[in-house]
Length: 221
Image (cartoon, rainbow, N blue to C red; front, side, top):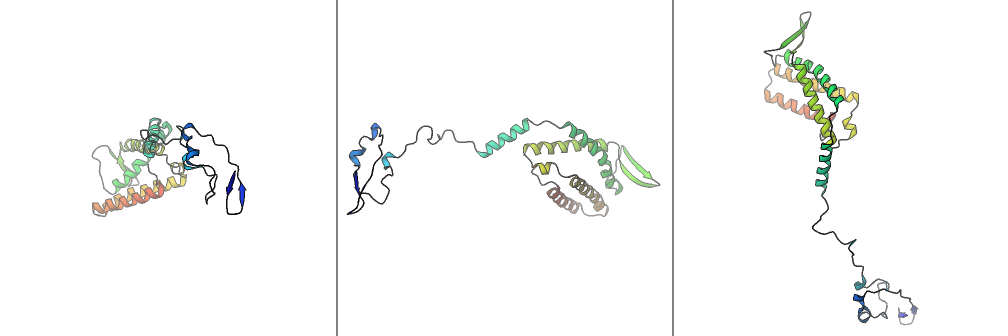
């Protein structure tokens, strides 16, 4: 086939055979192959011969939209929640830790006369000096509180997929966190003993709690 690119220089171009379906039989009548070359490539398929989408690669039906990220996240959270099992070892450890730590924290409020127990109260003295003021049921109460709080943390850490570094901090960071919490307990009794207004005490402790949470935890859970 001869196609002219200019007034004096002919060139020979071999056109590939096209398998045209029956609904394209009128193509050669409307577009004869012997045309002068233009700026676009002669081998570009005409508009009428462009690939038509088949059933496999056609656009998805509007009736079946892809699942949104929020629904997939909700499904993931639901499956993690359904598969959660309480950690028995953690329950025992946290109950013992809460029962041992609770009376000493409660002692700060007792020593500053922030609270007094009408029933079940006890006081330990050494050489006439009070070293522990609390109640007999306080260890059990703090033990149960430790179990509930730790289990909720464990549950939400798994459901919300908290980073492993935040789930398992270093031993030193754990001790610093416990010390900061104990200092807040002491400060609450001390501020009350000094006659500071209750709203000021609440605001101070709330700010310290947020700072401690941001530094020692910082997770969504």
